[in-house]
Image (cartoon, rainbow, N blue to C red; front, side):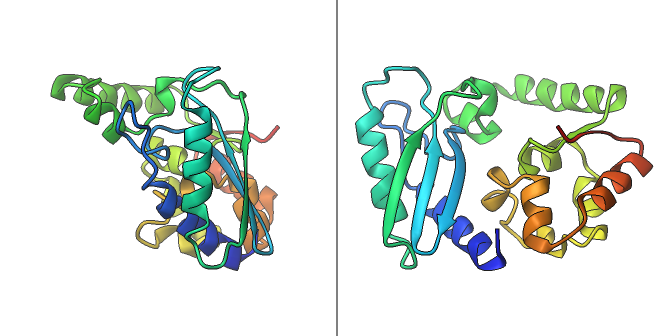
Length: 197
């Protein structure tokens, strides 16, 4: 993905944050329904899922997503592809979405943060198939390690919360022309186990 495309993905993710699930009143990005964005020229393909198979809002959401994507001036045509793997679960939602839906009270939010810290101490795993935003949320030193490897854009405000939701380390490495083995080595040197299959 070229730098130009990264900026477009960022714009598209911002546009998609205006598409709300009419039942839950939370946008499709924070619900974790957007699985991927591919751009070829002025055409975008959005890979998305639904909270349940056979969701009656399927057509509504697909149309709303297409309409939102087409508000990005550089995009002239758009396809929305429904995917069912990995299966959606509430774990894909952002903490903000969970709080908005009343799924977390203050105590649970604190418990969840502590749980993440406990997991970090037990096992630090970098899975190359996981979006960089999720890895950055799990591991406090992730952003600095990536920055030191040459991902200088990772510190741009808002990048993780937009492009970072769909960008994986291999996609970013390809876009920035950074050797994947160099990244793997950097994380292993810091005591991480790297899954790159």
